[in-house]
Picture 1: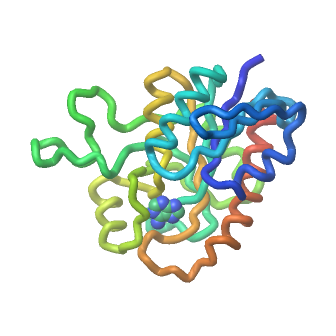
Picture 2 (picture 1 turned 90 degrees about the vertical axis):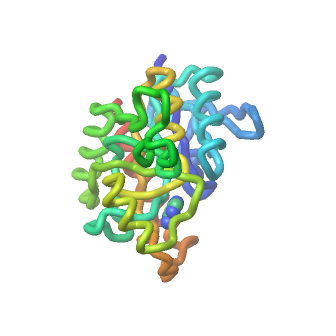
Length: 230
Ligand code: ADE
């Protein structure tokens, strides 16, 4: 059967999914635990990739190459960039781009990868639609937009404004575009689903740990809806 790759960013986030898996087996590769089995009746491989683009890229490549995943769903938290987003809202990726890819010194626009046709990686429209349907069904506020990734935790309102103006970002996180680029290279459908944990402006009034539990429950419900429909 088709194998669906599921990537989470944090332990808390994959825990609920992990607990729901049947016939679970663990394979360790490159220091990452890959959990194979079934979830909501579908064959899945679940893993936690760790923080940042390199971790995300290697994990995704192994998911596709070694485990043969034919589509990838990523869930995690992100900093809101679009002004209409509030903490707890969901961003569904229309596309993903690396905001820290910067060859402007040679005349390339910010985010553009030189000598490469594509720098903004489009999510699979059917997966985007399914994620949207899940949000509607769950009465979850969501926005479909560009997910910006970089190896930086954004905590500055001026930077947020730049990410919106220069790159039209909806949210900022640290893995999505790496997952997206590897999926693009392997011609594999993906979608990134992010729950807003903060406004990326340095106002640290959110209890991250508490929010993570909430966000995990939210993404678990979305993935349940999606997996059942896939
Ligand atoms: N993940 C959650 N919040 C983030 C932020 N502000 N910047 C980058 N990644 C994040």
